[in-house]
Length: 180
Image (tube, rainbow, N blue to C red; front, side, top):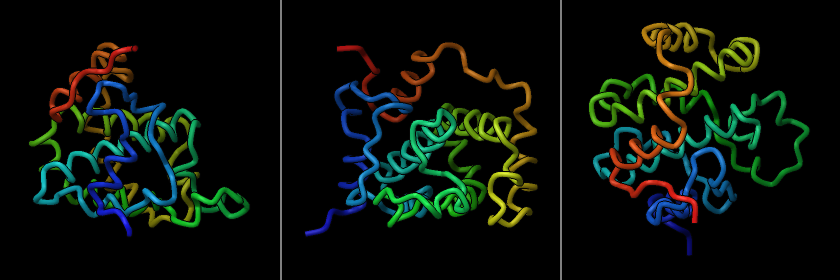
């Protein structure tokens, strides 16, 4: 029996309901939990929507840190034998959905939106998108860069590491992270 998208999202974000989840360390990127979460960025079910956005944020953060290859460019995945890549999270799909739904995301989840922007800026600084993701239409990066440029003065790391995440948790209806 296969899991529903919300069940999969809960598995990826395991521990978030108990305050035992850090975006850049705890995501469960198992093949059986894979879904096209970008399709839910404007979903009418608020639970599925917020979890899908949190998964995007977690994937961006872990990719930036290098702790996962989730949004690694396709050219770098070609020789990877890791079974997770049998079901690929295509960065282009996530960017398109983010750009299409950004106004509603910004309105409904302003803190989460800012953190998504932060991670996108950090990834682009680490290595320009056009140089990393040669398979993606450059016009997407032109549009994305216009959005990112609106936030050029945004503090790269937020006010405080856990404080910002805890505010995002609160905004999304989850308890704050705490070391146990």
